[in-house]
Image (cartoon, rainbow, N blue to C red; front, side):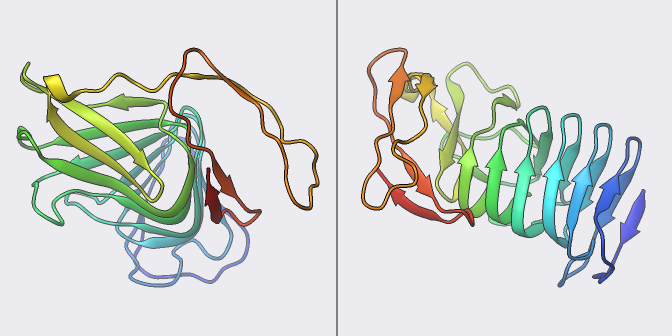
Length: 220
């Protein structure tokens, strides 16, 4: 395990290789310089510090906090690629009792692995990620077992990812899967564009539009 307790200003990217854990603990600046920190397969980034850019590749792990909850911050973009894992632990349902990843812009495609040191009660909720805006969702989730009368609901909100404990009768059927999404036409467009999509069955659709910097500019 390598520990970066302070910010650093070196140039060039940071690559965390398989079998290595990098723990960032800085309170300001960026622990890994100004460029991207890449978590490779078999590697782990953990801690409560701050970095500028994060990419977690398939097989890599990002773990907020160390032995206690923490809120590491990625100031520009956190890209959790397919096959990557965000590992979050809650030691209490009180504010500050659940670790979370904080970033300006989140790109999600991997797995959320959530654990607790207690049995969550009905109505408990846990914020595992907050962001200025986001694209994608966690494709898989590993969650603690609950009594048969309770169930987990994973909510991907525009600026947060939240886990809630609900009664099993309150669990809603999942949204219909998106089976096709076409590129807008015409592109470029001065005033309007048409985006075609297909669903496996009828259902509500929210379409979010982002600009080139990752800022959400519209929800349709």
